[in-house]
Length: 126
Image (cartoon, rainbow, N blue to C red; front, side):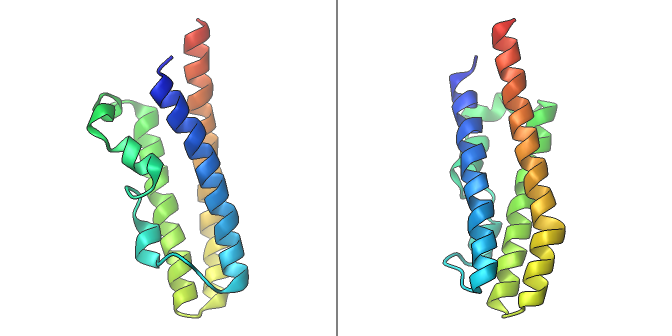
């Protein structure tokens, strides 16, 4: 098994689950410690940096990698939109974006990360 890939996926699952919890708390409090622009940066988090590192170029043609890259980008874009609504003091929009867009995107990203991790384990066992 590719240890780097396994570790990256496990770390990403935990980090993005934490982000989901923090964003829900941010919407509830109306106070963000992250700017909307920073939240939108999908290459600024550890997983994004890992995905776009030259060492991972071999994965760029992998269908799962491409789908996770797309989902990861959408996760960050929508998180930035939620925080943008908070910055504009538009609580209604923040809640709407969180519930209707961010949460389903987050769940989809987590599902795909877990599926990829399972596939890696199955390949190792074979």
